[in-house]
Length: 222
Ligand SMILES: [Mg+2]
Image (cartoon, rainbow, N blue to C red; front, side, top):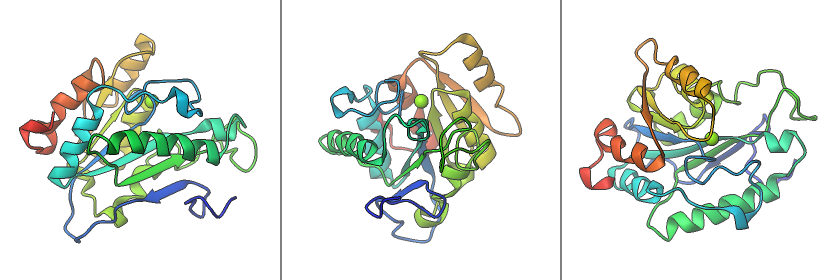
């Protein structure tokens, strides 16, 4: 492990950019990264391939203004698979953050899980608690950001994103159905149980436009 990176005791990337100013619980917007914030690129590890999804910067800026915590929660199995390391991940993150900032948007925290069942050591794990569909990445940000999970939402393009939201006790998730097979949508919608809502959007822009109402954002946010 490299001391330059914000890794927690488990080896998860746990970067709190803007700790909560007060103790009053507030909603959070949990965002999957690949396919939601940036265009899906298999094992994204090159800054040249970073492309922001339309609408996402405006929506994040709206959440910023409304005091809603924005938390990136991303499975990065490319690390366990030996395809890239934290330096490449950090470079991609810096590029995404720079582009968001240019549009007045910033995230409050980033959680990234390097684990995978077929990965190499030390990231090989059959079912790591901080790898989606498990809720560990979401739960890890609650204290530092004073998050009210029951008032929070997740946006993702995999059923595992919805599962992580449900298991964390969120209000609901928006499943963005693009790029994966029909079974993915079926599995995502099946996570709508026990009071957890799953909505569906065509793309990030459509998900962003339905979010203000759900999170109590001002209507000009989308
Ligand atoms: Mg994704």
